[in-house]
Length: 206
Image 1 (cartoon, rainbow, N blue to C red):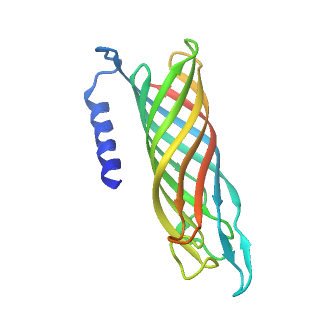
Image 2 (image 1 turned 90 degrees about the vertical axis):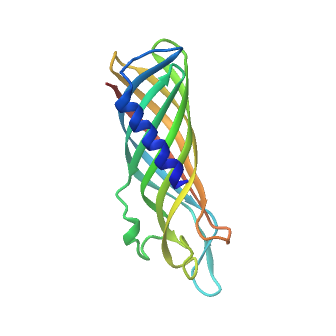
């Protein structure tokens, strides 16, 4: 997966530097854009947390303010590709026993974006790709038990949907919902972490 992310990022960078803006050939286009978004990142952890030798509690869900930046390009009227980096204020490397629920401090994604035009200004789209994130919390990263706090860098399949509205020739706004990943927190025990996000974003076409 690391090689895939690296190669996809390099291909996008090469395309941005080599292709003329808005060049059209056989239905293909090149329209680079930048985007910023804000919203919430929800992290749901399933499984049991060990409180004492004989006492367990059900793990739950936590919500964190979340912001991200995107570099992307429309490569066809109905398809775009994106690289995005998002972060919360959490620091997974410094997670301690006070973190009773899972946290994530950064997410890096490579996504393809099939899109359909409802009108000239309104678009609905899907998001498909992969995300790499650093997660911390009870039982994460195979510590001694589910009461201990651990850290893990994990990669998972991402998918989502969104709706975009064009504000003018250079800007648009959108709302989107995306599942960044569902991953094992402590293999092989049944302790899973799911990362979901709901956000608004603003896009600028160069």
